[in-house]
Length: 394
Image (cartoon, rainbow, N blue to C red; front, side):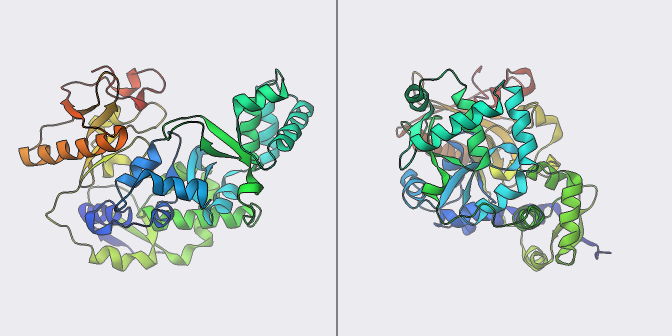
């Protein structure tokens, strides 16, 4: 049995904020280190990795991320945990790839059947795409035009990316463009071996890194974040058993797991008087890192922060607690909207307004106006994708 230790929730949350580079004293300039410390940057929405780094990195600029992505090729946008897009550093790519692919061939056949694409047609079109993309990058629309086919090129390319033969590269236009060019994975990352690890090795590595970055966590947290089965997670935990401690956290029920090597750092963590105020983007790694959300969100406000699929919208954090929602728009005028769950003292409100202005300038490169909203339509009552524009209707 693991030794039982009890920690205060505020101390645990402060410890995690520092590991997530969300306190002023934990900010660093090395964005690759930040990406590794977070086990990747969520990249389903093109703005999210930029804004996640804006909240954590010193002297961050868009050019720094783009240099690593498209010049140094030290990051890649790949589907991994829960079949969602992440930016992963080169050492993490083979781990995430192998751990999250499961029974690839069985999944591939199911994918093709559901989209009415025969295996023969897929093999034929994918071979042509690989020939076409030798030493070049092209968007889906251009590939389809050149091949002059009625086949579902978009879905074929998605599967090729999932299999590791293609990779998403530069956006077609600006950093905000959701459309990507595609390239051959081995052309851009010739030194990365996607078969470096066995599936079990990769899963153990992924669980170990998650525990290091997000622990203390529950088993449900690990299953949620990785997208793995509970059996796979349990087997991985058994494989690294000696390096894990079980603890309890005040105000939270159940048992929590963390790496033994991090216990002393948690014990030394002090709760400071300074207030940490962050405007985090939708799908930010910190709040998306946990299935058990009571640690940072009052359950009565969950419908404002999460949609029916478990996607978190853009949130305002005071220390380690979500206290509201924010949204940015460029239509008619640059605007950052704010919706607070409860009133806050004036000094906190001033800091929130200042942070809103800063993030607004980062997004639109112009002065922005901050608007406070009194109401918000709960996300489960919005249409699919409503979490991406949470205050659109206010």
